[in-house]
Amino acid sequence: MMLTRERLLNWAMIAALLIVPLAAWSLDEPFIITLATKAAILALAGVGLNIALGLGGMISLGHAAFFGIGGYAMGILAAHAQNYEPLFAWPFLFEGSNQMPLIWLVAVVFSALAALVIGALSLRTSGVYFIMITLAFGQMLYYFAISWSAYGGEDGLSIWVRNEFPGLNTLDPIQFFAIAYVILCLALVFAARLARSPFGLALAAARQNEDRVEAVGLTPFTLRLIAFVISGAITGLAGALFADLNRFVSPTMLSWHTSGEIMIFVILGGVGRLYGPVAGAALYIMLEHLLGGISDYWQIFLGLLLLLIVLFARGGLIGALAGREKAHG
Amino acid sequence: MADLVLQTNKLNKSFGALKASSDVSLDLLTGEIHALIGPNGAGKSTLIKQIAGNIAPDSGTVELLGRDVTRLDTVARARMGLGRTFQISALAMEYTVLQNAVLGALGGQGRPFRFFRNVMKDPGLLEPARDALERVGLVDDAGRRTADLSHGQRRQLEVAVALTLQPKLFLMDEPMAGLGAAGSKELTGFLDGLRQQAPILLVEHDMDAVFALADRISVLVYGQIIATGTADEIRANAEVRRAYLGEEDAA
Ligand SMILES: Nc1ncnc2c1ncn2[C@@H]1O[C@H](COP(=O)(O)OP(=O)(O)OP(=O)(O)O)[C@@H](O)[C@H]1O
Ligand SMILES: [Mg+2]
View 1 (cartoon, chains in turn orange, red):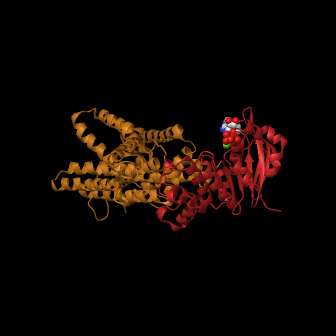
View 2: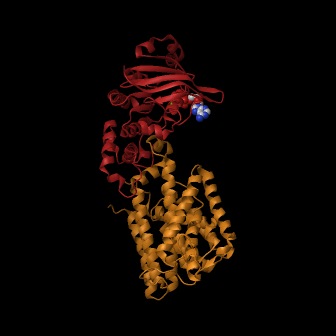
View 3: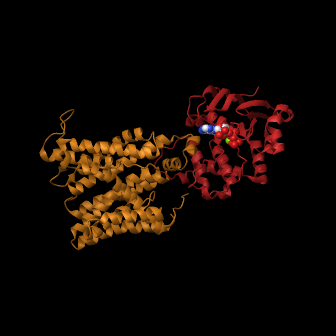
């Protein structure tokens, strides 16, 4: 393994994301731990999007759909469990669940299915049309959630206690952080391996030159669809965790504004850079926390920063600090 | 008689009022190099694209290895064994030279749905990729970014990627362009031997290469094949001289 500058930077970032909440824990500052947890979860959502956007070149403005589906998977399962109302009685009685592993599984399966349907329809187009169709699907789900009164409609769904994970006390902020952090690390390892796999090579080639990929007998559509499903599933898992962090899910998680935020994490950190979403989400949370305290209009500064990065540092934060990406191999 | 590998039957293709292919029928036999020549804009690339499956003909059929493939897409035709190089290099520019060749090998083996192993450490892909780069003389550049290659080197890489597919026939659209005299000569020697492996339909403006290599030559002018024959027959053909070779002399 070569010790490149980017790799050092990645390690430093992932270490900082661990050290900051640990320090906050020893100083008894639970709010900081919650901020770090939020950063880890949003980074996870970004890792998902980055597989579609960075690796596959699919500019999806609809990832809020998967994030929100993950959120609602948690909300619906937990709401039934806390109210002792069966979710369904056939083919077996199911009363919802407050167990995170099951909630995650449901979140992943449903967001993957949604990605399969949305991807199969929108990947027949490209460019601006693809952006608009993914946006439209996201908004469709958003309006559906608003009108879905059984699960809170516009007001969303609140959960009284955070869901459980076997052997841990999830109400303890540092333990819940640990869960989010470990999942983020696993997702990063997965994304790194995917990028270097035969599939990743073909997928990123389809982004660079579709004709070439077809000429060697591979179908860009299939490659992209699979990547889109993987991407949606990871973002959906992040949605379930995010809803659990807030003990609340609402249609806002499905809105195009959320899609834009997830994309901002990726762009801030560096499109296609493996740890880009980690840098981007952490920076976003820091800015929100620091500047948000100074002015309600902190997003103007965020906008300015985004503009500077898009104009002057195409590789985002990681690109600016670690230089041009090295072609691997 | 040698086997028929490729056959087009009365292909027609128009772009608006422009007739780019007009009843084009040609074939490619085992072991041969069949050169397709003609002035700029004659419709050579348009014909290649119809054979490869990028554009559909208005009428007529394409038969590959005895099978009508007119309705099959590019991917299906590539899988049947059609190896192709593009007139305008179509490569993954961010990749290294070796990665492009590995991509070809991956496509040739047709199993891209592996998500965990490191593709650049897979000997089953690296060996054919390196071998192909070796054969076109690019192996020393294996680690370079494709975007940093010269025009001619990109043409060589196009040929190398086609080789990794182990195709049953080659379609090559101006592989010599930008190679320079020495490079052209080298590639000419290489293609000469390659026809034993798989026949080549060769579009080329470099007449020295064409006359040195081609078993048969077809001349395309304004979308129509005006003559097909051996190098000597084409040289002697009055219509060809008037329509094409004469133009070259004048130019
Ligand atoms: N997609 C298209 N739409 C409209 N016209 C086209 C299209 N593709 C090609 N043409 C036209 O068809 C004619 C044939 O083009 P083609 O590229 O096949 O020529 P060629 O013989 O390959 O020329 P060259 O030697 O310059 O490569 C040209 O006049 C070209 O402008
Ligand atoms: Mg051409």
